[in-house]
Length: 341
Image 1 (cartoon, rainbow, N blue to C red):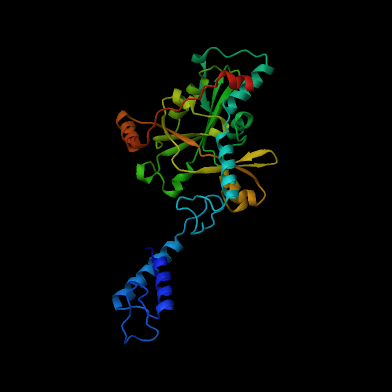
Image 2 (image 1 turned 90 degrees about the horizontal axis):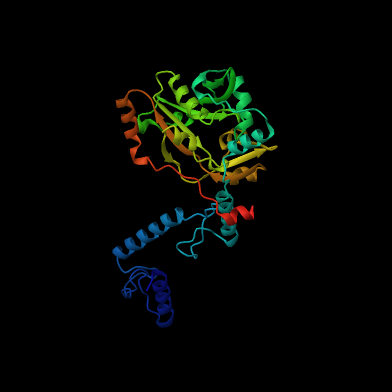
């Protein structure tokens, strides 16, 4: 018999037989007990008080709906994740948006489109290609055409380009790793040594190996204090990091659970961080309530590469050894899917 049923049973007994019973143990109260007595002894009074305190704590920490964040009613199933059928349906639609990802990288689509419209030949001599620093303005011209977000990072520290016979065939942009200000990299010993490869792209006529040469040679040109280079790929843009795999980066996947918001303003995509600075809040649901065109997308996946001596590289790699995962591979498109497209 549960506590609620026991209390109801005791009340029924009192009403039928006129016998007062303890609200905790359901035993009859002594004949000389006070008229308003509820418990047969101090122990039962303390037990009931502790039970009420535990119930209050449970209610204060009540389960919340994963969609609207309202508290789930106590009468619902113990494994309920949503407060109503409408919230369950909304969550399903959001998951459907998240899982509908492009099967080809955005930059590759852009290069193929420009290559089809161009008559220029491919630069065949990768050995004569030169990697050297360039200005932010020079990198911006190329990055805005090929990058998924179509914009430069908020802070650009170093820009490098690869040149074929004096023509720039690609650019990479290095900037601050924003999580460093939050102390995220302290546990790995990366603080003060880490830099992020924020943007990168090669033109359609560049040599197929231009991107890998550009990344590796530009890493050598960075200041000596940087020993860790990290880069992220965006599944929403169809990226799996093929170029970083070719450059022997280490893959750790997503380092934080959940999703992020992809926001569009007048057809231009901005990051959730940029939208947060504009609106004062983050999250796809919160931004959508403010009128932004925001949808939930998977979080970016991360790669790492290390500089310095062999001992230094091994030391920094061991710090994330428990996070390392096999390289992701692009899913094979079956013939029936191609026909459907």
